[in-house]
Length: 170
Length: 103
Image (cartoon, rainbow over all chains, first blue to last red):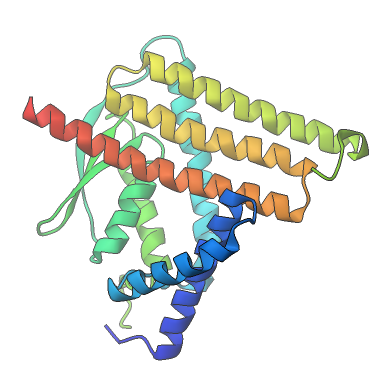
């Protein structure tokens, strides 16, 4: 993988600083900046030393990803609401395994977190191996949960620069 | 909030009320799911998914009453709650699974 340039690194940490500032503003109502500024600096230094940063994204893929995610969020909530309110038992919980094709640990963790908002699936763990496996709790084992997870993974591969797209030579 | 309910058009009030009701519906459905679903893992489904959309709907409904800055903050709060909800769901499920495997 190519090393990011100094400019790219600066932009990445500036974006992280802006995200911290927005969170602070939301949580405190825009008060206490004198306390936040040194705290933000310390957080950014810690992120820099531990190589933590926002994953680089392909901006062209952002609108498609947001549309897909919002649709899945609505479908997921509707699915669980319907099962909760319908008369009779509309669930058949099962444990399932899903082979993850994404290679970066950060991308896999993002997939695991987002899967829990998809219809009928809840990620429990990522088991390392060849390939890595996502352990899922599925609300209805007979439902087609696999295509939803595969579609989310595909969207994340399109979105994240760290992941190699199938058929791409970059 | 800078705008009062009297300053909003009838359509805005209708849309806002509709969104608030949709949010309420998903919160109630999530709570019923918590009571009806058979195990802790299934209950996590109810809390994470229904409540995320429920809060999103309520935030969207409240946005009719706020100014731009307040709406941005509401949106950010929803995103934070959704992100922390999905991560904590995963962590709770992992903990419950470990306990289940030990037993």
